[in-house]
Amino acid sequence: MNKIGFYFAYFLSPLVPIVIYLVTLGTPLDLYAFSVILGICAFTFLCDQFLLASRPAWATKALGLKPLIRFHSAMPVVIAALALAHETTKEMAGLDTEALQAKFGEASLVLLVAVITFTVLFMATTFLMNIGLLKKLRTWVYARTGLDYKKSRALHNVTVALAPLLLVHVLLASSSRLAANPFGTLTLAGWMVFSLGSYLRYRLNGRQVKSKKMA
Image: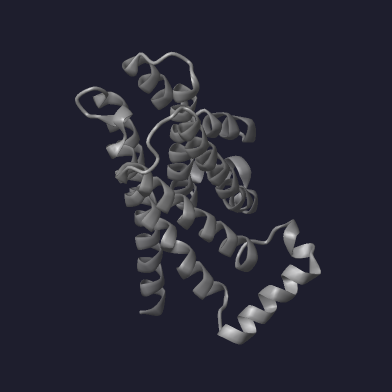
């Protein structure tokens, strides 16, 4: 797979569940349908983040390791924007945003924004580090708290907590009732399990390699 093929596959990854949801539910292309599309995109791209974090060989070969890491670091901003747009369009469509299902979505969004802010300020090497104030802030925080890249990475891994939160949010949605939309629901749940499983396997293999080197 080349670079164009990678981006093509990545940004079309939500297409299959989108089609399944819209066809199965028989919803017209209105504001509600648009909110569903935005939600599916945010969920799928977040699942893709776990997959990219596992550094699969095909993705590394297509982009190169450093570009892959930069892409992985940039996508949470897009995901947060999609999630916010999803919530906004739900409100505009007159849906209940105070329900338990909606609260799970809000909690996930808050956590996602917090992780993005932390990553940009204290982990990612982006153009923002050319801003003297942000660079000094990172240096100051590292010096004052004893925080370093290794500890920052460990804190960054709290994004794994987003997986069960978002999955509950999806499963509680009226559009994801198993009886009405089994294929769509199982497709999204399956992609989450596959992506998260790939990441956890990558992390486990990494620890095993380190243990062998230390032995």
